[in-house]
Length: 390
Image (cartoon, rainbow, N blue to C red; front, side, top):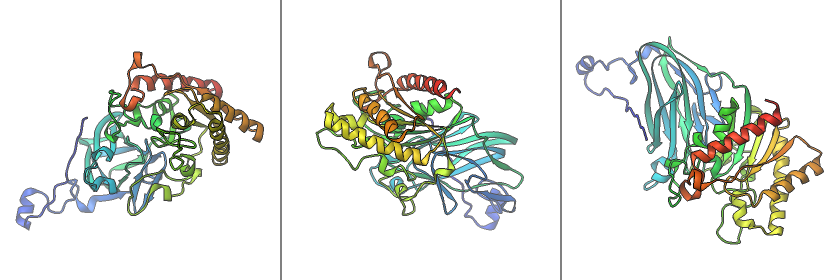
């Protein structure tokens, strides 16, 4: 993993020593203090990616794929990332947030946020240039969150939001959508945020293929009526619908808050397409039992109503199958029951091809590899193009 870090230098010597060192009268980034302006990561300055939350001038990222996208014109750009409670917990290395920074499409930072604050040197040039910069949270919401603090640039430099893409799409899912284990192609290994990379998963790849701005709501192990279970008892506390109307879900806090306590304003992002990929974890509970399948179907119908309420114009795609297709019939039943009950026909049902481990391998805990994600994204993008006429 390529990691580039810079720790800002602090001038603590006497005035003469400061003059010799060249630190006196300048900010840590080397800009004259009187020539510095502060840019807060808000929608007037940057394009936000996914569900973000601005608090006390820090933009907080929780869900996979959340971040910012902007153009920077200048010579020297540094970005300060703030860790949450998880970044300061002893023995928590498998749960630190993973973050990437891109400059003109090239990943220049790939790091685990394991302290309260990190300063990254993102771009440096002898002459002023305009570059595209993206900050993307690669790991999922449950284990850790991060904040992007205001950026200090020279007054003659500029930060502007990246332009909107052609389309808008939302993904609702579980570990598959998060990119669980995609950087660890050993099925016998287990969960770590360091091997999650949402940009290598089918959802992110589908958005890229469709030239779509995206939002994702996904948590590993979570389902429609049950999280992953190894017995016949449901884990009813591990479900997506209960948190869908919030910023996300996390076991840890940032500035005394948790993402699930922050209500999401759906007017900020109205997608043309919503993809629901929930059922893989439910299947560990349902196990083909008809009564449990009916319970799943009924909950799915109610969730579809909620998704429709929040996204009145979106085409909703009900999908499952990458890690098993057994529960697909119950998904179809939900699709049919929902249409019959509501008369809403702006929905589709779609089954992914199951992963082929012989051809494409397996990632940690038998999750899909990037090859599998690529194939899934190609099939889903083609289906969306056909249905939507894109």
